[in-house]
Image (cartoon, rainbow, N blue to C red; front, side):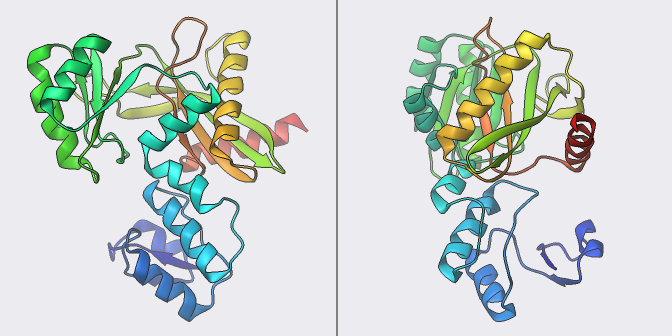
Length: 267
């Protein structure tokens, strides 16, 4: 196994047979390395943007891969996710796509405060701001556009409450939910930053069922038929339409262990 990271001291290197000092976002260098080493496959288990890179390279090199480049591309763009979910009827909060402060102000006024302004193509809470009032919009737009790769941003309804994460595995198009965890976050100003994931969830069984149903619908809408997935979702009444973020990968070492335990317990 060859591990890639631009940081020579990356902790994951000690688990690999070999290492390569290459950025996980350097698609051309990764492809040259994969071709030269005649690898059997590529995976991007840790972060979102390289998920699409791995799928594209696998397709070009004729390597087996659980998801298509089209499906993988959804992991890198909240705009694509929103469009796909809307077309499939997957519950999600109202949102608008904007390109500047004037558009964002108008969108925020239509959606209402508090709202969320975010970069549509970043992960890890980069470019994300909870906007409580109109005077905060301009700075939130600046933060989002500074982080955005596409000079666009999303303004969406803020959905209060605890988020849930559904870790699952799909095989042959069948969605198998493994764990539902409560995503516990830090207090402001660290908006959206996760502190821990609590398992089992404190939701009532009917609520867990609604979360799992929405996650399964998201997986189907994304076109994922094989491999791991993770979807975050927050509540609004009984509709479970909180901000959906879907990724065709497992999230976090601890949750992968929980998934393994839950599977053994279910046998």
